[in-house]
Image (cartoon, rainbow, N blue to C red; front, side, top):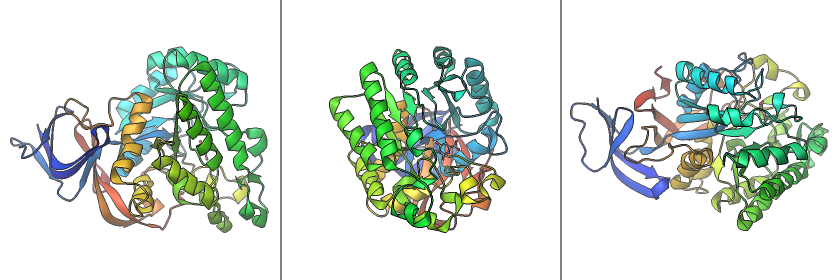
Length: 429
Ligand code: DOR
């Protein structure tokens, strides 16, 4: 049966298209884009006044399966994704056991098909057990369907191992995604090192720890001539290092997060563990550099680093709380409220950074609106006003630094492979 999305503002960064029109979907694919199209008895979604975009893609989430299901699993995490307007998520391998072999990659792909409600992509570990000593089964994992390789969750200390890993992944033209923070320098800190950490008496994680690691990682990628993707960039120094590397033609891409783009270390004065994250929320000068980096293309993508923890794990003294929080259900609201409505980013840029760019980096065929492409579509009301209430989240991670905030802009409908899986905030599967 056909599905017709009628009269929406179609935004398609792949072709810089911004027009009012209709989209027809049949058998999971887009079959027509144009004016005055008909449903031939099929279902019609009236989208006048709404934005119709390629489905949002989050290239950096932690779904905690296998082994850490008290924090999240594929069923709860992909429902949170659907609620937030995401049609594809790529999950990191810092699970128990670590996803460092092809059996686990295949198993997770299968779990995604049976338990997931959005497309699930798998990122395999670079080192066995994330121990940073020996390469994982990188070739086998890529053959099994892993879209990228990463030791995210922490920094890979061994320069030698990263060099070998990059030389190896370069053969497959799949990116290594790095969590770039020099652990020796940052490891004992709990927040950004600066005036606020000095005032609070909390040991800081200096921005230069990120700058050094990003510089090293980029130099190795340049040496190996292999693609590298820098995760959750948070420092102004890192932005400048990436900018210069791109000018030299290094195969580097980078993401930043909704929280680093809109929050600062001033929030930590509350000692609220919901603001504890790695890399940490930094001072306003860093935040402004991230926005400038997004604007000039130095930073390609916005990714959530959705890192849910069980409520009781975060509900402890600041020092003992794990880093990270849920991000999938707030990301679009944060970006539209904090960057689009404040005129820092255009809608075309928002959709590019949250769909088309991550699809290109991971080599996915989604992220575009074109005839023959998978019908992964997000319908957005940029004017919809809502309040964040973590208790209502689909994710098991009930901590968010945006709890209680008022947002303007929300995904109203999420369509995955031609099926409506979320409507008006309710996940239908
Ligand atoms: O704050 C974080 N939490 N940063 C990371 O890189 C990992 C994540 C987690 O897995 O909890």
